[in-house]
Image (tube, rainbow, N blue to C red; front, side, top):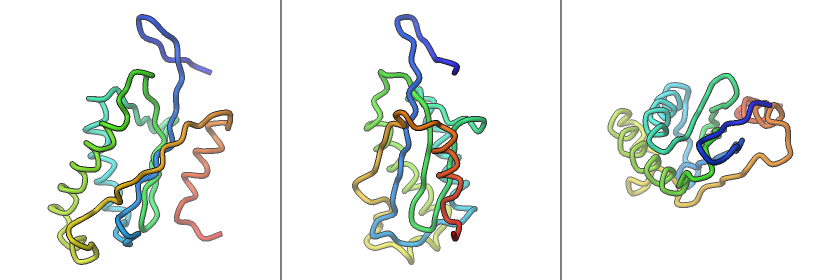
Length: 137
């Protein structure tokens, strides 16, 4: 296990974030998800959040996204999530006008979100769970 560190601490903190489209509207496809991921990758360094393909993961179903990322303990995650939801909502609606037809009153993301620490579960188990989103079992 490779730990992260800064001047005063050693840490390894992984989060599993689930963001749901308002009223579970089915707007995501691969192209829209890829763009949402690009926006995440653009904003996340400002908050010391890392989405690395080698370990972290991103995936979607038609009405939500799953994001696995890591961050140092002093990151203001709720501020990041609000900034991401605001920017991605604005940009996705602008770049994919067909999304607006599926939304209600311009709202893209639901107000709430699910944020879980990965706790004792092996990161590989969580990564496989996220990879399997949208697959029929």
